[in-house]
Structure formats: structure tokens, C-alpha cells
Image (cartoon, rainbow, N blue to C red):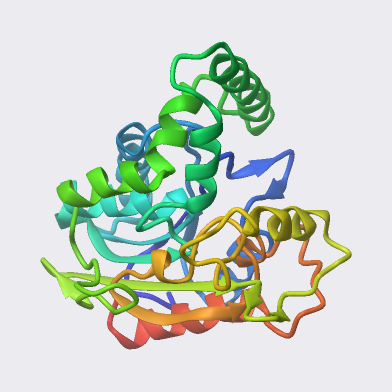
Length: 289
């Protein structure tokens, strides 16, 4: 085994483990397994609160512990998956060796704030949008083979806003930076915390120019909703909003979905997401994790 403890990949909002064999973390699990790592991909509700998804993740971890005969796991969470991983680490610390946030929404998303502002709570518009997302996620859940997981689009949106994550951080402050743009503690309560993320815009210089990828075009459009981190975001999360624990790097040339090597590894930038994951697994191994 490459690492002492198994690795659990945790998907973000609107995510999945795999759809008819097509993975959310495209090519990542296979690359890590070639290194000798024991890797599992969690399947959580695509749209729901951090507490609901966090408890689902905890159930999954207990199953991993039984299968691997290890008492802890290394969590690698993308987007909202970072919050779910933090929830489990704070609530069930004895079962977590490390938490790694990948483009994590650790201080909220300005993109989520913009959507929240456009949807008045309790309005017909909010209800219609929520029903559409929930229907989409139920279809995805059916295709993944996990059709009975609850979905709550409004809870998911509220969980990702700046205000929502502020409330989350009051309950689970472990490894948060004390100053904006800084680093948090690397080890808290015996758990190692790390983060990395990317940006698609740095001043006037566009980065992550994978124009063949329609998801990248969407990320570039979403990036325009940012104000606080207008010039440094990945399309859904700001650079400094992603910081947690020891920051490996927060300005990789990649957008929010490049971080999981989507779509199908299409990119024209110079950053190889798979290499970032494999380097990190080697790093965790060097830490005895």
C-alpha cells in the first residue's frame, strides 16, 4: 500500500461516484491505485446540506474501514466534498488521518451568493429551480445505482453561500486560516489538513485555456459573478476562499472542474491534475499517513 491508510475521494455538489462506469474523479482512482494506494470513491446526495452529506460520508467511511481493516482514512474532498470531509473529521476524529481540500468551498462561494440573491427564499422561482435540480439529481442517482439518497437543492445552495459557510465554520473551525489568504494549522486534534486549488484568471492573463471543454466556458462565465476575488477564482470558488490547513498551492492553472480532470481530461493548459493527485499521495505517504 502506498499510504498507511486508505484514500476516500469525496465528490462535490451535483456530483456522483460514477455514472454507467464514467467517474467523477476522471482517471484519478486508477492512477492512485497504480501507485499501490487503496482508493474508494464515496457516493453522496448530489444536492443537500453538509450535515446530511457528512453523515452519509461517515456511513461510507465505516464500510471502508471494515473492508480495508484500517481504523482511519485519508479524505480528499472536491468542492462541497471538502466541507463534508471537515464535518466528519470534526465529528468523528478518531477515524480520520487527514483531510485534503481540492478547490474546497471553505469560506463560501461568490457564485453561490449570486444565485442565492437571484432566488428569493420561498418564492415560486426558487421552488421551480429547486425541483429541476432535484429531478436531475434523482436521475443521476438512479444511473449511479444509488437511487434512494435524499436531495434538497435549497439546503445545498444555502450551504455553499458565504453566509452558510460562515455558520459551518463557527461549528467546525479546525485548520482554518486566522488571516485572509493565509494558512491554517497543518495538524489539529491529530488530523493533518491540506488544500490546493486553481484559478482561471490572474489579472488580464487568462489561464486554463481549455477552450475545447464546454465546462471551461461555463466556468469562465461563472467567474464574472465574483467581486471579492474577481481576478483570482476557479469559476466557482475564490483562491483564498479555498485555503485550509497547509496550502500546497492555490493558483494552479486550472478551473473548478479541471481539478477533477473533467471533461475526460480535456485541457490545453500545462497543469496535469492527475500528477497533482499522485504527488499528493506520495506526500501523504511521506507523512506516514
